[in-house]
Length: 314
Image 1: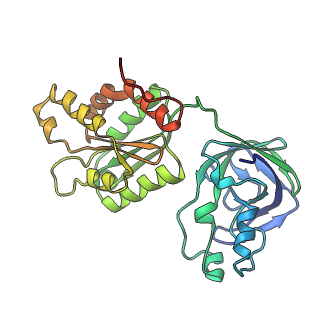
Image 2: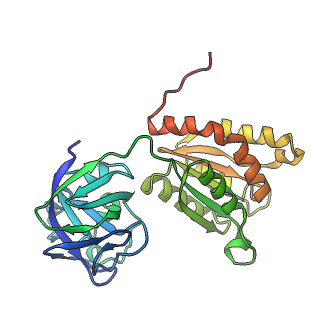
Image 3: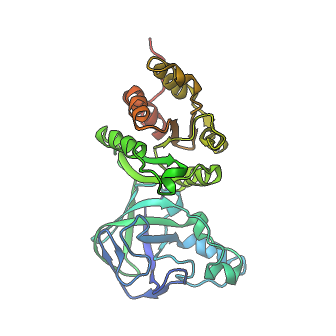
């Protein structure tokens, strides 16, 4: 894969949902984005990028798209950006960007889709945060660096609770899971509180695994016998592969503490390079469950990342 290219255009827009227009130079602000760009802010999609080849291929279908029309801040020649993994670094002069997301949910009412009937940003757009600031101009060289293979594992925690999402109860299980993971060295990238709605959970699991490329997703809640408890079904619906040993071990160890653990329906699966594990909804059960498995998860996550080999115990 080619890791060096050139900046073809630097673009900004005054308002969200509108196309961007080229500027002579962009001033990049650490932890924020590009000066005077509507999408800048303290979030993970501070800068958007597209490969010039993708735009050129789109124009060969008969479209007439100019630089910035897809909402990209940086149009890059010579690097297939969408093939870079999340956490890759991009360097242009003094500016360092870290890729945080590949692709995004489509907005059907965006200006470019209304005009052309299609938009490549949801499929091929790359999003990044600004680590170090400076200026970038068209014609500048940009270099990509693959992520450190020994970087901390990235995790997301999703809590399923009708009452919690409605503000009728304070969620304690999600924070308990996040705290334990942080203490074990994980980077907690997102914490999400959802009602017990399977479609919402499936959408978030797909986004976190596909676009944000999490190493690990922990869910808490929705694993019991109540008609609203649908977390396992939603999780299995988005799985590429089953990883049943984790869920089986959790039930076995939890049975040592309470026979009611046999009623837990949580599953453990893999989607692409992401491990997804369902935990019960109580803070006590979350702490107990993570305590059972945290020491052994690292090896499995390294295998998913390609940093370890599967080997049988002799």
